[in-house]
Image 1 (cartoon, rainbow, N blue to C red):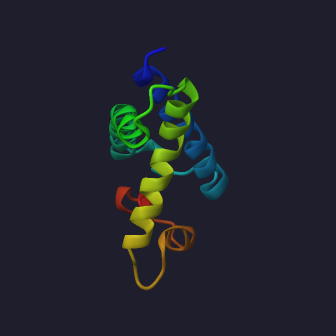
Image 2 (image 1 turned 30 degrees about the horizontal axis):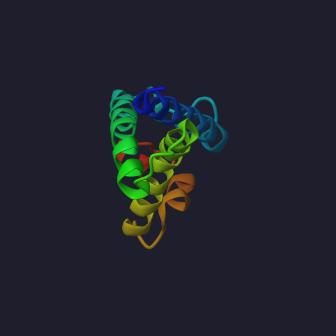
Length: 114
C-alpha cells in the first residue's frame, strides 16, 4: 500500500485522538475547535505529517523491509513529538503549555500550541 496514504491515516487518527483529548480537557463547548485558524492549522499539520513521515522514516530506517505499520505509527506519533518539542521551548509566565491552558478561559490559536 502507498506509504503516503498510510501516513495520512495515521495523521488523521492522531488528530481524532487529539480532538477527543481537547473535549475531555475543555468540555464539549470549547471555542477552540470552532475557530477557522484551528482548522487551518489542523489541515496544514495533517498534510505536513502525511508528506514528512515517509521521508523521515525512509531516511532514518533505510531498510527495504519497511512495513505499513511503520508509516502509520510514525504519522501517529509525529505530531505528539513536535508538540512536546514546542512545549519544551515555550514558556509563558513561568508556566508550561497545558498548565497555562487549563488556567485560562480565553482560547486562542497561539495557546493551542502551548
